[in-house]
Length: 140
Image (tube, rainbow, N blue to C red; front, side):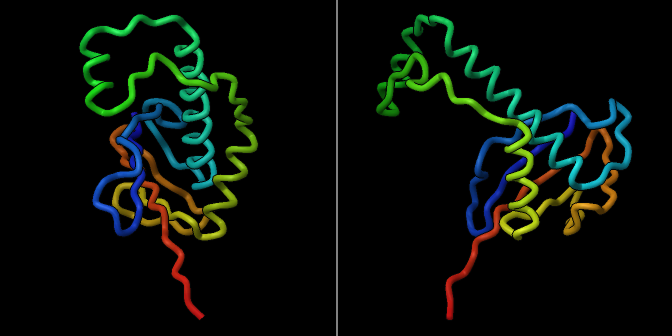
């Protein structure tokens, strides 16, 4: 599995918790273009989002611990209010690739920064992929 993390410049905490996706090209990994790596991660996350939506559609009874935890955080919720959010995977991929091209985030794979969507990126089953959101500075 490929470990994915998301960070933001100037923040100590990650944007989201680390998660894993299958290594593109199978268990052995290989060399892919950066654009294909980004597309793979985005499509995996869209699929995971759809799975979470489907899961929330099922009726769930909360345990006493879940209610207690919810009270402690200020929100007790058994599901989301909008479970019919349509997500277009192709559009999500296009948006991610455009954001990369516009310099809104950078990608680091196994401690090597990649700046070109058409660059070859070697991946192994133990690879770590980090998306780093960049902050635009205002000035004039």
